[in-house]
Length: 160
Ligand SMILES: Nc1c(NC[C@H](O)[C@H](O)[C@H](O)CO)[nH]c(=O)[nH]c1=O
Ligand SMILES: CC(=O)[C@@H](O)COP(=O)(O)O
Image (cartoon, rainbow, N blue to C red; front, side):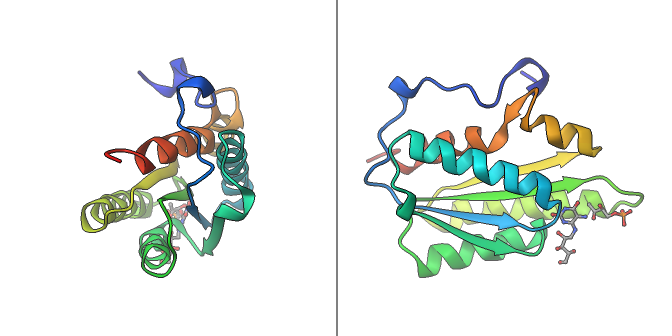
């Protein structure tokens, strides 16, 4: 199902485990800050709505989406977290740089999920234009940060 037909912010709280005993890391790319801040707000609000304590939501910033892999690795290595959310916004420019950043970031975050026993949630928008990004960070399609928070809670308790 494409995002076009799904609201990213809709979740059934009764079906989400309570997050009161969980601790989360959120690593936020500073590129396209208007978008990533909105994604962060959606994620943080959903985590707290589902019972997480604000003091158990740890935020680190990195320069761009390419640095998300390293930032997520470091937060896993240095902090006790039950799940990590990687937040970024990549918007296509004139060159093929978009493709390399998106691919490297997706592969890097996938690799972290293999290398460590802490789920890392891919909350990276990869859009052709800013309008698509705005629509997915609190606009007509909801907020991918909200979706990522719910996934983080579900994955944090998986197998426990
Ligand atoms: N163009 C975007 C970037 N580019 C920067 C890279 O992510 C990286 O920080 C740089 O290549 C240095 O290693 N990053 C985004 O997150 N979004 C973009 O649209
Ligand atoms: C995703 C990018 O790196 C991109 O926004 C950079 O723009 P350009 O390809 O025009 O250099």
